[in-house]
Length: 211
Ligand code: CO
Image 1 (cartoon, rainbow, N blue to C red):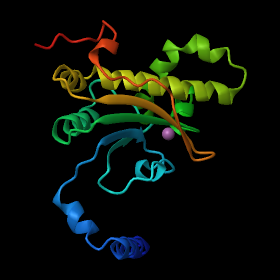
Image 2: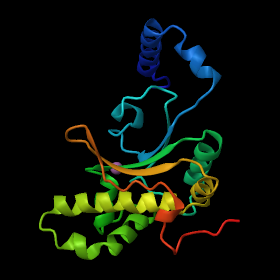
Image 3: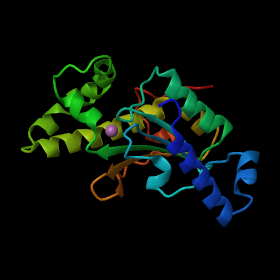
Image 4: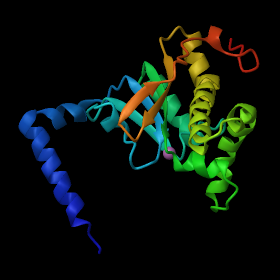
């Protein structure tokens, strides 16, 4: 099949339904994007950022990768954070993991999956940091869930450790970094309660003395 006709039909129907409700929606949207939120989530097809929080196009800037990882040297993710913070001036960065994450499961196993195994090493690192707390849990589901939560917490720290976020705080910008978990089983989002809002909450090892 050379043309995915069904998707173009769905697109036309979607655009028509939005225009019926709000005739100037797309012309207004084309003028400027001014989202308050940057969402860093998993690539999983079931965890679409806009849908989960019921936001319209233009309201959330999105970066997704397998298992919502923020790698210190990932230019893709870092560029998204920089653009979101410095140009779009988002007020919130949300790292959102999800229960039932295949990336987390794969990282806990020792099976070979190919190139992706190198990416999953970052999650294995998180597992290693918290292995004592995770391995004492009796059920596999509990172990996976705890690693999923620890991974979000770790990635929130990684966002906060970026030069971009530290410079924004140094400049007095109001910027909050949140860690959330989404449950595919019931569609409910939960806050892990680890919101970071300033330089004073950073560990001394990663605090940058930026003049
Ligand atoms: Co996932």
